[in-house]
Length: 185
Image (cartoon, rainbow, N blue to C red):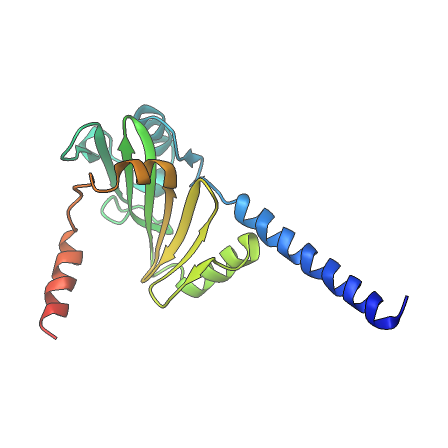
């Protein structure tokens, strides 16, 4: 074999290895955080939130019914609960009693975007989508995104597709205020 054929075979093998590593990393994405997993029931999530003080969960008063059928939202607030945590506010969205979106606002006083981003890249490879607002890692069934300023989001893509167009979750007060400010520019 000539040098160029050996080089081409070696180069192809290296490319295949890195491609398989990327595919493996993307397929091994976490389906939740701190033992809370997408697909869990409302009661299972409540139980785990109750056992983990880092979330600042206060019981049923943190649970709301969303407009539409079969929709429940649990909102936790570690800062309001005076919990010293890397978490700030978190939302757990359910459809037909199954968790399909986890949104975690992280405490900017304790952790920064760069640290989270580099850790996720080391564990799961480079994101499949990247822009200044967010980085997204995904596989066939779920999506994990890191959004600015410092939000980590896990989404069951199958349920999201099923419910798209049906979601009636309104913007939070800070989101509405930011939109109003941006409209003045």
